[in-house]
Amino acid sequence: MIVSKLINIISSSSKIAFLLLFMAGTFAGFAQENPPIPVKVEVNTSQFLNFGAYTAGNAGGIVSVDDNGTRTSNGDIILLNYGETVSPALYDVTANPGTIITISHAPTFVLKNANGGGSMILRIDSYSQGQTFITTANPPSTTPIYIGGSLQVGNSSANPPGKYIGTIHLDFIQQ
Image (cartoon, rainbow, N blue to C red; front, side, top):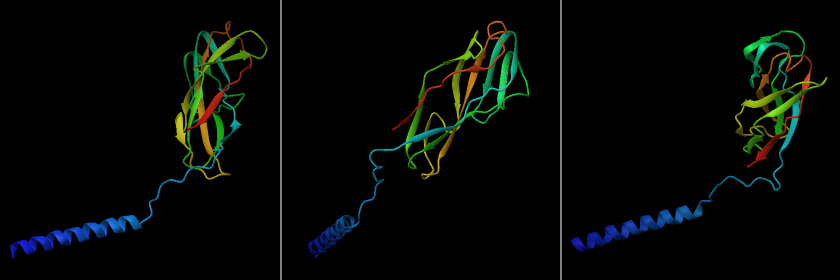
């Protein structure tokens, strides 16, 4: 009698295991669908990085604009509240939601005085979504990316007054 009950228990366990395996086989598995090929990422510049008006003393210093548009300075720099509007750069990124993008660029860029004489070093160092981010908007809507930087300003003889311009090359790399 003990042997027959043991066989019934083993037989019942086998039926349950078979039923579980059968049920697992009947449910479809779900995974993230593959993105469309080729993956399309579009980036448009909506606003340029602008440090606004300031003046440098004998020692120079650094003027920074973060991704929120907050301007600060250190050293011998006086921030002025007139002239061009201070702004971070704004890039509108169009891609499928969930696309992972990394922003890559050189460590520094050179800005030159439009009237000649003088140059400054620019560092990109502030990102609203981080240097690597995941897009969230469904096209045609965009994911806005604000980018700020720091400008190394020399004294007034090294960096005479004027408008300094340059090209910032950023790569938006889809992973």
